[in-house]
Length: 86
Image 1 (tube, helix red, strand yellow):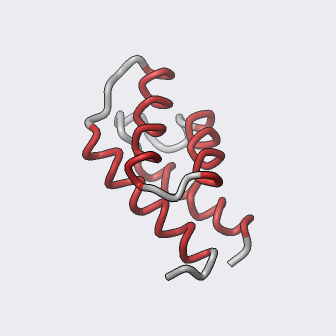
Image 2: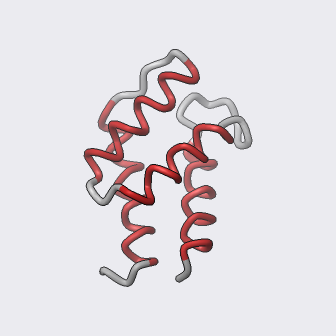
């Protein structure tokens, strides 16, 4: 899987995540920030912190860390699959 396809899959996953029940398509900036961070992060805990910070900064609402870890593991899985690390 190419990096472009990995990014597309990560974007689709984040769009469906919808942590604030605002509907798909309302998180474009946050999705872009998280996918950019995914490029350089391999640890789900580190990625979860970035996710929590990005969404909290944009929406001034806190997402429980456990929910961020859950989505971070899924994103890292997509990345590892793309890099054939699994």
